[in-house]
Length: 319
Image: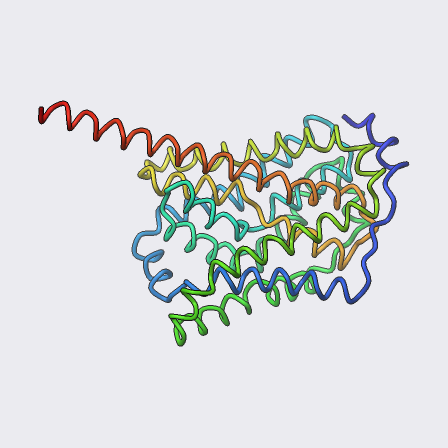
């Protein structure tokens, strides 16, 4: 697919955000993490330690299998360096905060999902910059481009701490001391953060609408395929670990819903000239909501249908 590179490179302009907009984007990510963490308790982490199979399975799929397979896939398909690096960066991010909502809609194990989001967000402090540097350098097509970007690892770590780890700790403290407030406000946090995040994506693309349309076909195919592979990795990993259905679906959703907002924030902050990478992260941010909600809706429908059939069978048996 490297023949697409001249077209993409010629059409992609520098995506720029003002310092105030960058602060606002990072604040939105922190706001999202704070909202998710309101329902977190120390008991969730103790549960991970006492029953670690599902979270460990998800972490292996998320931070080892997905980045490695992404690296190999972009290399084998000869995808242009900018697009390949964008895919690798997204694959190195932790699970997205919306995975918890979609797990709930899909009638899967929400406790497992929330625990995995918390653990993966903490792990991302180290794993996201480490994996991006590792897999970006392992792919010979992206090695030179990665060196040109040279994202400062220590600054990325500090940014991840500020937008993920610190809000999570604050959310847990607020939730523990004000449980009624946390219970009432959690859904509003989720809805507001979703709307604001989508607004950022829309604004970013509206400024470069012609560019987005010009490369939308090739990028959308990559994003849809990449997202499908992420869901598949989560499903197959959880089946290999013989997890029950509720945990299996939670792991699948957690691996398939990546925190593309973090990828956008990293790029806008440290390398706004990486237009191809920004487009990948932006398209992913929209598409994974569509695919995640579709999958959650299918799970919900199929489970309700099975429940209705079971009630009908029980009624026939009793009669």
